[in-house]
Length: 224
Ligand code: TZP
Ligand code: MG
Image (cartoon, rainbow, N blue to C red; front, top):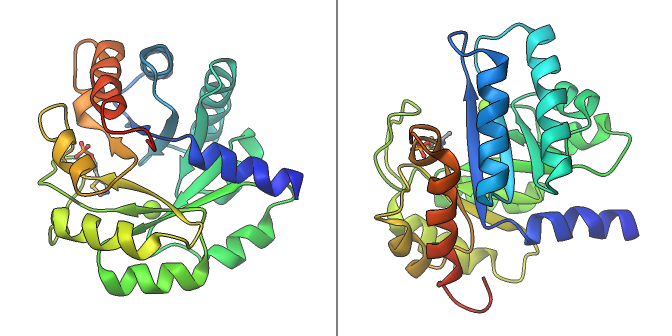
């Protein structure tokens, strides 16, 4: 129960969640500097999103990111890959709608780990509540260039999902096109945590971008 509670307490403290996207074009040093900057800037959680990298490189990068996150007491999540999340010592894994079921992924783990699941609409949310991930992604809230999107979920979905999740014990992060200009609207819709990619990683000062978002999120209310 103590260990399970530690997963929940990690999820509960997430307010600013940053996606660090690793592509073939980046060097590992560059990505680690970005990781370090996000940690310094006050991100609560980082997700490694490695698309098109070899497994070996993804693993090595994950391991280094996890160690930077641990030094700063930042939660570390690996996108898509339960195996790499487990092996690298990450706090958890983030799954999409096309990935393996939450319960099957949990069976692979020999230690308590955070399992997150993306949801884009009310039907997927109901399914997610049955599957019991530790948190759900809610989005895309706004237009995004980071991922190909069929349909926006919008602020309406955030509002619906936050009230539906109330008392389920499942956390949430709103995602998609969130930045310092519109974060307030996402908070007003009820979100207690936001996930951003380009607003931070596309900034020439990622630490400052995190800090700015953090300030906006801090003003959002005592329960946040
Ligand atoms: N899932 C829904 S939107 C999105 C993902 C991974 C991308 C978020 O990136 P950005 O740059 O903050 O819009
Ligand atoms: Mg995925």
